[in-house]
Image (cartoon, rainbow, N blue to C red; front, side, top):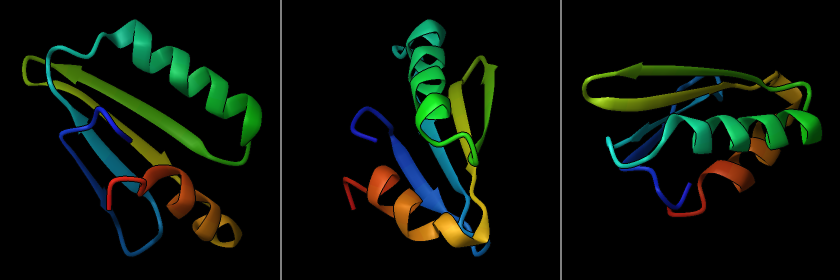
Length: 75
């Protein structure tokens, strides 16, 4: 996720990306909508507060490699 401040992967294969206040909610929602059309088996959760936006992507067991390819672009 090129505009994320950080992106971490949990032991269960899910990802958590933290964005700063400069990323607009509508931009992130548009990304989630496109990804949902592509990968309907992922579950996306967006949290917004004064610190910024957080995107959590929950991944089924059989899709961890696909998720890694999508969300670990920056290492």
